Length: 135
Image (cartoon, rainbow, N blue to C red):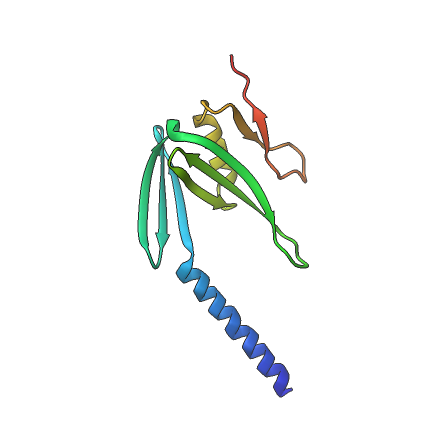
């Protein structure tokens, strides 16, 4: 019984340490969209707060991608990224209003030759790159 309690305690302590490590070294990214562009705010406990403003015309590429976690649960996390001539402006994972963020970027980056479309259907989650039809 002592060994079970010891192992459980060690696992708990490791979990708490990992949580605080991720909280301290991780970034909290917020993307705020407006009519003329968007603002990316990155908060890092060690490095401070970074705020960058971009116009829609500065966006040179958008990317939707997914990553599967290793292990038995095998969960999939969706990501959306926007690039400018100066590099990646943001790379966020699926969160509240994720689909809305992609739609806003689709609407405001009409200068890109493609957009991201989510297929209809109950079990279809992956966005697909679609070519824009120019009129």
